[in-house]
Amino acid sequence: MSQDTPSSSPHVPRDFYADLMRASQTSRAGFLAERERWLRGVPVEGREELLFEFEMLLRAVERYLNLNTVVDARDRPLVTRDFREELADVRDAMDRAIRVARHLQDPDSDQKMVFRKYVETQLADDRVRRALIEEQLDQETPPESLFVLREAFDALKNLLDHLLKLPAANLGLFQDVGKLSLREIVLNRYFRPFRPLEFRVEYDRLRSVRLLDTLVSLQEEQRTAFTTAFLGLFRLLHYLAYVDEEEQPPFSRRVRVLLALVRSEATALASWMHSELSPKAGSKSLQAATLRAARDIARETERVAREVLVNLDRDAEAPLRAAAAFTAVLRTQVVALVEALAPNGGLADGVFDELMSPQEAALRLRKDLWVYAQLCRAAESHLRAEDVPAAERALDALKDFLGYFHDGGYQLLRYGDYDAFDRFTSLLVELPWPPEGPGIRARLGEDLRRFIQTLESTFHAVSRRTHLQGRGFDRPDAEALRDRFLTTPAR
Image (cartoon, rainbow, N blue to C red; front, side, top):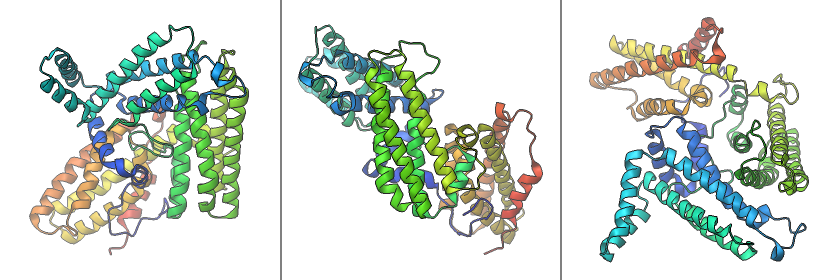
């Protein structure tokens, strides 16, 4: 469905991006859905970003404790190498992960779990103590799962503090720490870190209007493949945002761990683009563009590893230079792929900031919210007047609009807004169609009235954003979009 053409599907459209992400999670979808419900109730500002940082650190520790990620065998023989520097890096990453986990933990439930842990150590009856231990390790809820992982990292950090006092840390010691850490990470029920090309609805969203409009014009298989590529590229850029350009050397040790993660997943993404994306890209020109992007990412990743990352111990500026090089190549490939998909899109070469314009995103979202409210108001008005044919036509228009909205404006919402929008969409999905009987129509009218209030409050919140200061609302343009759906012939 293009941006200008309403859908003709009689069904309420689903969120393509959420479906794609959940498909990447296979057997863990149930746990992740429960975790998503928990996250929406966490009373912490920026909770989704904290969760991203926490899982990024878990993934980074896992990758950093892999010898292929941190060791250049040509540099120093493994048997004579001292791994204290690497263990100190891991210790710093774990320390930050523990602090982030505490921010995500509800204070009341956290205190209860800490108290239960204390009681466990005081019990003389082994049967009761064993029951408490098993109850905790069952990880029946996301808070319990988070607490278990935090406790494990606390113990590992304490162990590392003592190991770092040794005169040297040999290969066997490094590998044993890796085994213990990996076990705690991969056995965690709710916070097992994402795999490469596995995405999360909580924080993996494409927030470029131009990119979203480009992807929605593709055929389904092609769209899925390119969306996966863009999500992977933006995931890497999200990692790199944690290398603070304003921080002064020496950088936090965990930066070295994050750069190893970027190197590992950039290599994996380049390989996937070469073997999986290119055959599904479509035309020969698109296949060539994806192969070029894969080659450039792989080549630059290898260069940065060979010329910059090997000097992390000797060059205080190396982390910043590595992050800048990774960022430059990833941004360049994002723009190159968009231009390959939409050759007449008007982007100048390498203009990543134009592609990711927050003002353009805010303008699009504001317009879409206004139209959404107008369509809901039309349906609610006809239901209240008991004009059933007109109400059905208005509801058809509303359902058609949802396809357009999910492909664009919905992706530009803030995470905290999703719940109300998802609940309303679910209501329309579950609604008997057409809605028959005055009771059902009356309840639907009330639901519409309440959701209109949500749309209006969200509209005003978006209008107050800094990026829209001085930008008036283009009402004629919004009315034209509304009318394209309202004038859709009845089916």
